[in-house]
Image (cartoon, rainbow, N blue to C red):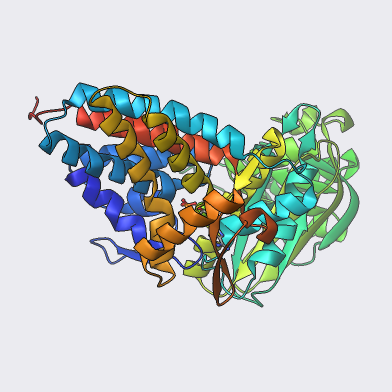
Length: 493
Ligand code: ADP
Ligand code: MG
């Protein structure tokens, strides 16, 4: 019951006409999303069995990045069907066997559904767009975002595969919402240490330091007593020359961008600003790590050790101001494998959801590009799977046949839900879809703007990666069969 209830809670978010959920925590913090994994994650769920459905979505998210609602809803329906079977005195182990057998048939059916067409840029765009349609992407259309997504995954593609981890999404609140940009490098939340510093440097040599560029101060409060103005002047001069020394060492090193994890004295930054050097101070560890990997710089712990060999390279470093935020763009250079999808959206909630939607789209495009396997979306693959399972169920003996057929019935939840979420009658849609599948071979419930039609999803560009479907079947089956085997929940120490 608990597992079913949790799966049910995300059902209305499925597909292009799926609705969003507003999650409010006890502190009033609000998250608005359409993403199954996020909803289930944010939900305050205590029941251990329900928690397992959350894990289905989490696994799905980790493995393939999309299809979390689908996986959760299928798992919930497998449980619902199992409940009916148990009421009909089918033993849990028979259900488990039947479900496993049906899952095998399902995986074969997915293989049969793989599109013959090569996965080119057009197909990648369709995959990315299908995963974003219906998401709250603000004023940005899924279509325009999809183009950037495809460009990004192409950028990180090599003989070794698709390095999805080299693509990051950076969102920025405010400004015009229809601005998406692919930055050939990284974007970090850092501002120049001094207003007089250059905002753009081409062909940059970057020094990355763990050095405080200022007068050494201890953790203890130190005082020194002076009894003449000469002594005070001498102290000030000593300080000045220390600071001057830092500034000169840095300026003479030949670096034109300096990144340090520590403080930079105002006098040092003024001097460096005059020298035309761009400095970022107090840079956090994750930004520092990103800079190191994007530029190929080596971190230096003492100013005396600074030499050109440690410098990183970038084609261009620029800084820009967006309202309250300052950003630095580090583009191209030594190890310029990284790309950043830079998007702007109106409000915090919009950029958060944009980030999730683009993240999913990057995942599916990368998955489809890596495997070269896509299947029709819009429920067509589920209809085909259920059909194949029913056909093969006829040859299975005994009560297990009931479990195998129940698995097919559970899969119908995907097209049924897509229909319900577009305001159609789910039963009529299912009947029509099956008929179209029998006569045409491929039939999905396609949402195209205001229209809903039953047709071949491949022709309408509604496609999902085969791996997303496989993972959904596997993780939903695993969770459902695990729960079905349990007859009691016992409090433990
Ligand atoms: P999930 O978390 O499972 O990815 P989504 O809300 O993203 O949930 O919905 C995914 C489903 O929507 C897939 O089955 C996909 O094929 C389907 N879909 C995507 N675009 C369309 C469309 N234009 N018409 C019909 N179905 C679509
Ligand atoms: Mg999706």
